[in-house]
Length: 140
Image (cartoon, rainbow, N blue to C red; front, side, top):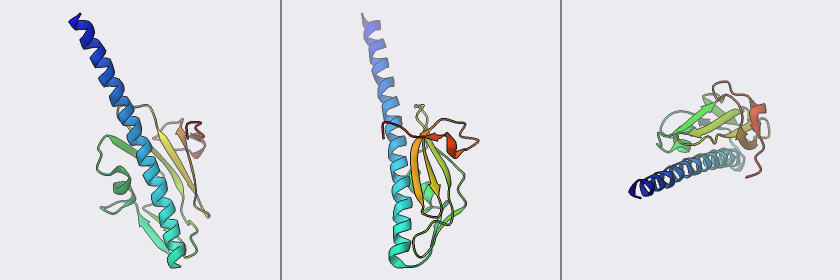
């Protein structure tokens, strides 16, 4: 009886960890989409070009991952994303966000010049990023 209770507890804990990992991936993907959109809007509102660095303390990676070492970010973005004074995106690329403990890999594809971001579920090898592997997800 005690063994059965222990097994049930382990299953519940594992399920909770998987759900938490998936929530972290979803949250990071939302942060990324919001940061990209706000950067584009800021350039347009100020009527000045804007460069958004990818690395560093204030970089896109640090702001998306928020110091969470369980999250993984793979991308084909340049070292700086650039937006024109009228809010057009000069750069684009594909980003895949995953986490230990879940099979969920959320993807975002940013396309110049409008900076349109397509969000979906990644169905490819994150080491070989391909925008066509970022497929629509009915759960979004």
